[in-house]
Amino acid sequence: MVQTIKTLLAPVCLASLLFCSAATATPRPDCTDFNNNDQMGSYDRQWCQALAIKENYLADGFVETVPGKNGRAREVSSRLGSRFSSGLLGDSSSVGGRVTIGDLTGRFRLRLARTNNTLSYGRKIKISGTARSGAGRLEIYSYVDVDLWKLSAVLVDSPVRGQEPPETGLILKGYTRTEIAPGTEQKFTANLIPIGGDFFLLLRAPDGIAKDIQLDFQKP
Image: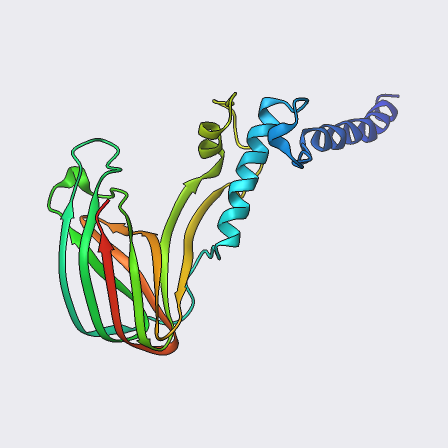
């Protein structure tokens, strides 16, 4: 009799577990015109905002890793100035000046700033300026390390805080890309890669080599 009861209970318990598992998998909301949908709850609105930001990163060519092999830069000349903010956030840290490169092969991390102040290690530095390549395409990569769930909480009217993100994939770590065609000059913005007290701009020559490169950085 006891064995019969156990046998009957087993399928019921298994079915219950499957039901609970399915119930906890929340489907994505319909994000069509979510900013103007008054019937949408705060949690779903923040979720849609995070997905919208992610779409923008993907449209900008977001990649987790930069293709190609490590290369080198030759005939590098620079005249740069950097400033590190004293605040905790460090959003006003900046780099200005000019760098010229005779030729670039493969991918290369170009150091633009250095500090011995440990309080400034890992600061976020966003640069803007113009780039020109005399021959061969040039790619400039902007470093991305963003929590879209937390960022979306800043952008919505009624943020949801203290709850886990609704899905994986809302933390992006990688790069977005700006491509400079040979013989042209183009504006760009990029986040530098912080490694200790050094701050690098990641460049790549997708055609194998790019020559006569000029980078001008504007201080904000």
